[in-house]
Length: 280
Image 1 (cartoon, helix red, strand yellow):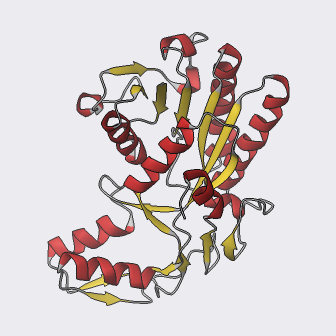
Image 2: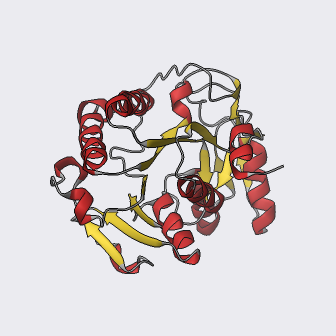
């Protein structure tokens, strides 16, 4: 089986490539023409193209893969930027439609828990999306466009809604890298919110394995939450990291307000993913 991966030099993409190579899957990394990080990619095959200006023969250039794991998305982590639906959404749809009409049969796109909006508690795939920021709106709109495309050009679609990730290679403005920097600087305290918000966190390596397993099924799965299914408070998560690493630093709780674009407590329902992965 041949799998192509867009966004291959990103946080998730590098872990997906590593796992595909470990599983001896034939893989093509699709990267930006300007990317300078490609030398360290573990796979032998790469294609440089700009999703916003992709050639008509993009599917041929990618080696006509059996499946695509589509991770690429610009404008992050600014979830409120209008770029997401003004520039990113139309470019993404044009690119993916071109691949489908050229012969792509299996497409997996990563979505976001922000598609659920301000809904609280356990979030299930059959809940109506209510995105309340431009990023979540654009992702949900792309999913709907692809569902309509399936009515005229049938293909298998997996829409993997990701929750919160952590692991090696994470953006430096993310929670764990910020905590690590504070420790390295010798700070006595780490500034954060009150930490009582409940979230759903999953190691990026586990996310990569789940995405690959879903792609390998070559099935029309639709929306599936890729999550832990277990709510954990941000404070408990950070305290756990401190203990695991043997760090000595106090938490300055309540220094920052809680984000206004997400509810205080939400997490993913994992039952569909467990069934697909045959987990008890």
